[in-house]
Length: 362
Image 1 (tube, helix red, strand yellow):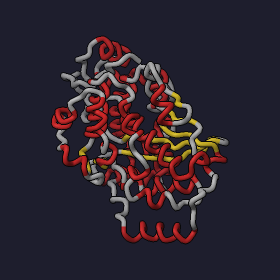
Image 2 (image 1 turned 135 degrees about the vertical axis):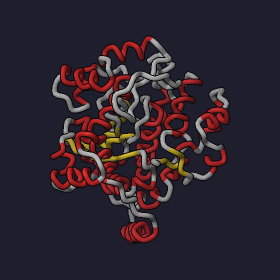
Image 3 (image 1 turned 180 degrees about the vertical axis):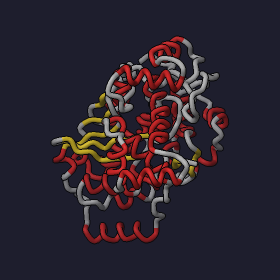
Image 4 (image 1 turned 90 degrees about the vertical axis):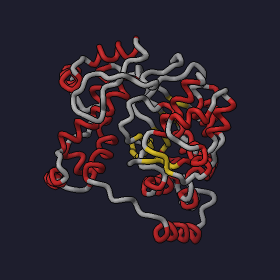
C-alpha cells in the first residue's frame, strides 16, 4: 500500500482548530489516530493525507488551508533528507538529491526536474488513484518544497514561480505571503519553476567535507528505494510523461532505461501489458482533470495523450458509457454525483463521497 510521512500534517490540529474545525472528528473519519501525527516518520495510508487536507479546506471554507500548515513548517519537514540537502553545492544538486531520495518522503509523490531553455521545472505529481482534485495536497507540497530550498540558501534559491493546475481562490494574500514568489493557477502542471542561473547558484552554507560525510551517511545508513514492480514503475513514468504528450511505450521504456520489447515482456510476466497500464492511468487522471473546471475538454484530451478531442471523447464513452462533457456537467450541477471508478473496468456511476466538487467559489 502506498503511503506518505505524517510530517506534512504535524501542525494539522492547531491549524484546524484555528479555522473552527473539529480535527479529531475528521481524523477519525479518515481512519487516522491523532497519536500518529506526533511521529513525523509515521506512514499514513494511501490517500489519507490528501483527503484530510481537502476535506478540512472544504468544511472550513478555507482554500488556503494547506498554505497555513506549510507556513508553520520548516526544513525539518523533509526529515533526514533535510540533512543532506543542506550540504549540496548548488540548487540543482539539491533537487537531484531530493529526487534520488524521494522514496523517503512518500510513495505517493514523484518529483522530476525538467529543463526548458533558461528555466527549470521541478514537476510534482501525486501518484494515486484518488477520485478528486488534490488541490490542498499539491499546494502543501509546492509550498514545503519551495520554502525548504529558500531556507537553505535564502534569496539565491528563491523560485521564479509556483504552478498549480487548479483554479485560484478569490484571495491570494496568504499564498503570496507563504510562497514569497508569483503563483500561477490554472497551469498545465504542478511544480516549482527556477531560472537556470538560480539552479546553478552556490549554497552559501556548502562545505565540501560535510557534504562528503552527509552523502556517505545517506548511502550507508538510510534505506534504499524499495524495489517496485514493473507495473508500478510504468505507472509512475506515465504520470510524469503523459501530460507532456510522451506517454508512448517507446518514451516510457526510454525513461525507464530499457528497450520497449523488454518493458512489454516484463509487464506480461506480471500479468498485464502496456496498453492496460496506460488505460488504467488515464482512467485515474481523467477524474481529476474533469473535476478541475479550469481546463477545456480538448486540453484534458491532450494531457491524456490524445491528438484530437474526438479520440478522447470516443475513449471516455467506451470506458464510462457517458460523454466527458455530460459527465462534467452532471458533476458540476449535482454535489452528490460520483466520479467514475478509477480502479476497475467500465462501470456505472456509483454513489459519491464528499469530495466530488469544491465547496468554495473559484
